[in-house]
Length: 315
Image (tube, one colour):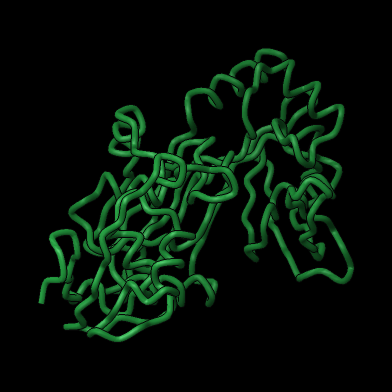
């Protein structure tokens, strides 16, 4: 059945059932960018049971996938995981179940590659965790946000967790440091959000009456001189929701270079903050196979704890 020394013939196992062909290939071909995966599928170089397929074709148990030999140029190859990143990710696993895991995502690391990002968390984890045949994001965090990020290690787990997410059975709480004194009586922001693109291609979000429904609950955790530590619970899951809702309420997040104000930028510099102060502190969800409740907490990074200590001293 072999066509050459570099052609791979891979049989689909139980853990890969239901996976899309493109995601299956991303896991199997280390270093291949998604654009290249789409190209070899479109050209018919990838076959399932000797037949042409599409990137979104779902695999079934026992399928035999032909993976062609690939020679990646340095320009198009996904960046190899550095030793520092490998060690960082290995130490960032908060809790791991049989078919899921929760990572304490570092700030500054995108969850996936693309748009100039050579390697994201999911691509890096697929390189680090070579023991896993399946690894997919259940949800996303902004590049500059740290904290709890849930991933599925099997297709059934991904489907179950996605269903829980859509049915609002997950509880996500974030910590954010905002400009000004957040009024204790303002515990809810409901403002429709619309995504748009700037002239330079950068994606932004704004409050717009024609946008999608978005709701966020806020609670004051601690008040300082000129800033407030709040807990934010996104009831809906829109892009940049917490950041835009806080800015809309007149209290932008410190360290926010997209939606901040001159005052928030001044306070950011004054407190020695060098990143967005937004951290996914707790995450609760029903365990995909048993349904039992799981609640996980990611401690606040030392750099953000230091900022709070400085805010308390300035109080």
